[in-house]
Image 1 (cartoon, rainbow over the protein chains, first blue to last red):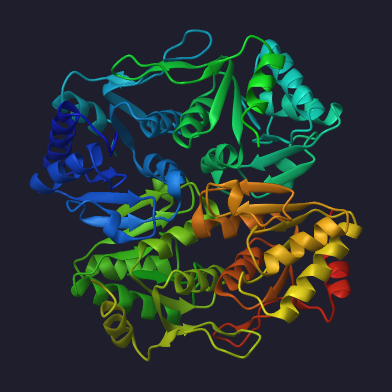
Image 2 (image 1 turned 135 degrees about the vertical axis):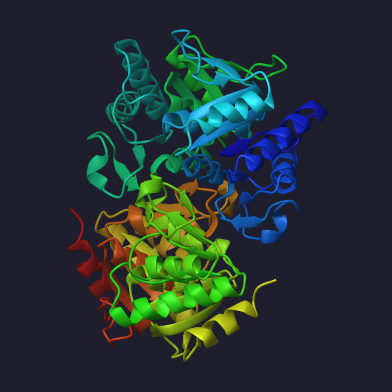
Length: 152
Length: 152
Length: 152
Length: 152
């Protein structure tokens, strides 16, 4: 399961991301993130402190870009195109907060048929007024429960 | 300038895309698209019939995937990650219609600092209620005029 | 450490790859491969049976492409460009056998400054006659020892 | 047709690359390169002075990275993975000189079934002693003639 969100996150988003990462780890699920700061770092810390594994799929070519809680840093060298790798690699995506990169990840994940669970993230409507099919969650625990239903 | 939009487009979207491609070509601007059907094909046809060039940045490895109006088909083999290439390669993006791939391209383009002009496309708001900074246009001519302001 | 080599491997290459994967795992090193058949599958099996982890960085979008020994399948959707991700993600590369994809991975890894250890793989010379700086190993154990020297 | 070779090229390589670019352009063929210095710049200059078009598929996100002879700069943001795009986008590849990136492009192009013509470039042999199936050319004119046979 991927956890996506801004590197420049609010305190509330960081608390949510930490709880999501911890809960995923306690359910034995590997946490994928972009390996950076903010939501990515908090989810990785949660995964580590929950006894699990955080994988960081990095934009650059250097492992040292990863936050310190990432157990497996994977530099890709792909820049922004690494967002496509993060969501392709995941079976489900939990989106927290509102960065532009997050919106691109939500859209790509839905395009690839991955389930997307939202915790205080983007809302969007196409020209006909149809909303994005992001499943809203009210809590980190609910987000994790919904995401785990999508995992083999 | 990139023209992005659904392969499965409405008649109205196809008319808009054709007019945008034609107008760009008549202003001497190369038209970048994903090289496929729908909006991509109509913009490419407009570019060709306007005396210009359509470049198709394709997801697969085979030139024959391009629609017949593409002057320069560039297979990338990158799958959905080619969307990142389309918008990175452009100086400005005109978005028509409401596919999920289109939304990912809008978000990535804004993230990269490219101007995005919308003609009947997605609206979105982040958790604080701030809208995407897509500049709305009322006509193909206005969209092209706004996009050309961004080109060196 | 990445283990790269052909999906269509000889019996001897498969034995080497298995031994390399197992030895890496017994040294506590995560084994990265392209997740496919042949050398990739044998190294993954070795990693699993050595009590370690095999990560499979897949070309397609579907986890089911991974061989059954991969603990963490990461579909990228990037096609052949995933080779660049495999070697960028690694701190060192062990190359076994002689597929064209393997040669591209050796060249990219050296370009990125990753150490490359060869076990019966390509030899190449540039127009001035300078050989590729691949370090030859005589056994899986030597290959792993040389690779581990490169790991932080 | 793609022309690939080192950014840090010898005087002889630059003369060859210029002649290849010019000859391709005079035959009405678009010249694809990585858009950088050395062989890429010389081939692009040849294309321009031969009355044709040079397309530069750049590793970064900024058009200004392209050499000044590139008619159509396409920043990809993909870093080294843009090498895969250069050869996937081409119908045939002419390789000049001996950089590591060049070797990765030769190997990927052959893997994708693209013809590769060599003008003073890498030689390589797999573990069984089979050479790379690069077609050697004795002159820029011969290289272009061989490459054009592969173009639709």
